[in-house]
Image 1: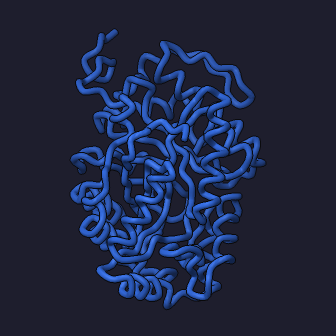
Image 2: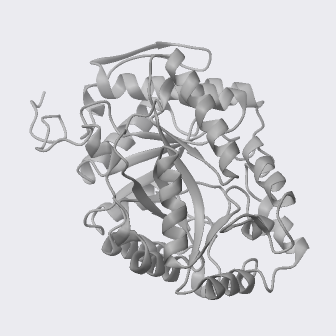
Image 3: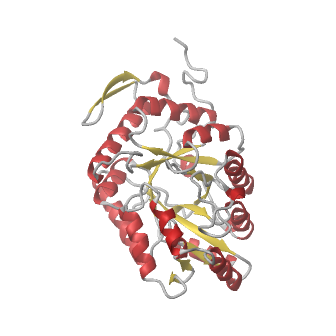
Length: 380
């Protein structure tokens, strides 16, 4: 199957709503669920307590919080969970970004993973291929900073020669794992060349396999293997009828104009991946199901991941295990409201999954504190 992690294990992540994405009723703002520090912290801490292995901290200019600043605050507020912090390539000068990431990695003692984003910077417009070329340069500079004595890079966007001693991360064997999602030709090629985990959005199984196989073939041409993950929502209840009723309730107050407004305030609302989600919704039945247990209703008011696994604990577990059979090794889950659904999934499904931390399996996180200028390494 050409995947890095051959064992049938899964890293299960939750999602913290830093970007104004938490609701009782989709599309109906609820002040109690605003993206405040206190609320988003409560989601992260609940996922940490519930035993999730990772949590996605998204990035967006819309109402919300700066991702790396929030992640730094969470370093001292969490016990075991990894933080999957989104970084938008081009926002920060790459050596300074490398230094910020390295500092955060030390604060977390290796519990840091990164989600690479290549969308337009707020207030600017750049064609897709140029954005991915810029992202490729940023990633290469980060990787040089974390693995070499110096950065020596000559590219289209950046020309940098600089000692990398101050930027050594806690994770010594290559730095934090890089997670990435994107459907365009340039996006797929970028991931195949430079990233570690390719995240897909919901689709029917046949197309998920087609995309995964395409990325695997590209990675093979570059002499690499990747892991594969799925970003998807969940609605799990004691019975299938209760789960389907919860899905109907979630969108019961959604007005179409409001849903469209919420979707299109995001920077990536017209990306190739979002178009795939819109197409998927068009294939669904009258209740919004495109496949048994896969409900597309969330995409009516959300840019990005727009579908959920809906069912009783056995159905949800069976679907996730099916994805694991297909080669998926990372799941980034969420549900509405995020704290409540985090508890439900942790109660009914999470203990029954064979879980792991990909960074530990791949030797990124050291067993002892590494000697770097930020720990006990030589001071000049």
